[in-house]
Image (cartoon, rainbow, N blue to C red):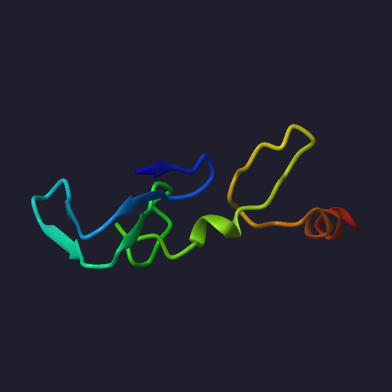
Length: 78
């Protein structure tokens, strides 16, 4: 298993994931990416939706929203 700080958990397959409601999802792939951000449309499998997050400040804080600074400037113009 490999844990990526800003991405999915990579697990050598085949893999079965049991969700909170008790349903089981299986993948027979040799390497499986498990979503940790819950943005994936194919949850629990990662579809790289975590890549859509943008850096929003000098601290490198990531907060989804996707609004660029240019968009904020345009809103504040009279």
